[in-house]
Length: 532
Ligand SMILES: *Cc1c(COP(=O)(O)O)cnc(C)c1O
Image (cartoon, rainbow, N blue to C red; front, side, top):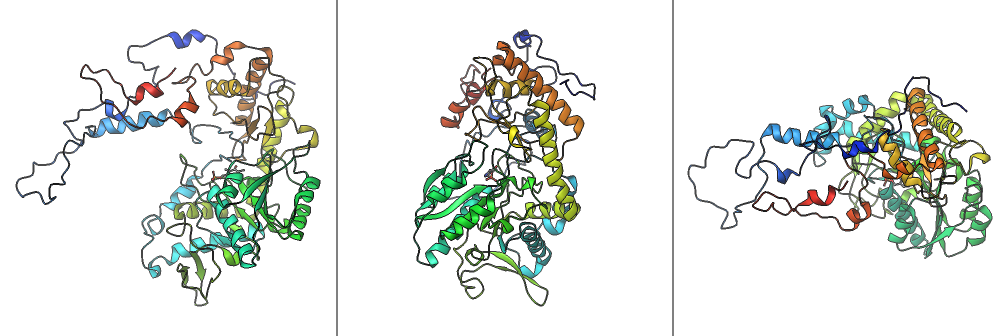
């Protein structure tokens, strides 16, 4: 198969490793600027603002006044440049394709941003009297109805602040429902391929986690699941479409078996993007499912937050959902049902998960996205995201092993393994090679059921030309990995930093800063993260 390249764009393999050996006086590389720590620049004796010296008045701090805070003293332009330079070292969805599988890194429409900044949404406070924020409550309520509609469920808890938080909410509902019927169960079943948050959530809720094996074609082994069900099983957590990028065709049979055994079905809805507008999880017997608004509904992921993970609930679980929630009254007004003592309205709630009602800024963005697409547009989102992933799968399966490609089309993400790479080269080398080509790497080594997994999710917001660039880049790197091109082990060679010791950085982060020695040499953070 020839390399698809209609745009005329040419991938260039890093031609010279010597590039890295070229040094500059400043450490800068062309217009890519190095930036020291905030504490290493500026002058401690200056500030960016001029205050007149305090004229009079005794301190009223009772001896608690602090001296010598030792904050870095930067002027406004120095400050602006510091953060702008740092921001340029970041990769972002606004810069290019972000093919992280399972993360659904899609474009964040600017219309969402405009609406979220309307003063009636952007300038309000959670403690304002409710009659002054009726529009905001209506917005929460309308989004809630869309989520219920799209999933075919009975109710929704809007307050959870991420997918993982939503999982916690769902399992707390399940636990409350079981406790209400005096049925103490101890085990939650989780497929081997599950996202790490699933077993973590179950364990956090006090359940014992047991694996459900996968079949050879990457799906839940229905027979093994049925054999394990029993009076000790509280719930099954299933991801559908699953983390191998495949739809679970036995989902209804799974739910029926789980319900017959007196347990509940939690669905991890992180991959809802592939089926939104096409399949309603409620029709498949799901009892609780989180929806990552920052995945399917295009709100920003933003450096670990703010996310939003509303949880849709079945009729059996809805009475146990958390406070607070927005409700519409017959006179057309909206209210936040907040107090546990408002017992008459929601007496069986398991309690409260967050201080307020959830991520308002994400609600406005998600509702804007939904309304601007409409029902037919959302269906097309799912169709196009699946089409794009299959285009990637079929364009690369001759150079990358695609373990489940034989079992038909994938959903919205394509999975590859490291099978076929030359001895000594592995998934991480391919991922680092992608950085040199100007792409954020795909998800690596997840799910664990695929050796050296590479999970690629293009989303529907990428054009064919953009996908062709990515395919050409990944193809060239895959070919180098197959051919045993050792230079790939040095990648990335063009990035500001090379290969960092990420494990060490995560396990032993250096969070304090040491002052530069009087001679000006620094012993601070920069030395730790400045490898390469
Ligand atoms: C993203 C994801 C989660 C966790 O969601 P967060 O919003 O990151 O907490 C859980 N499961 C799967 C399959 C995911 O992709």
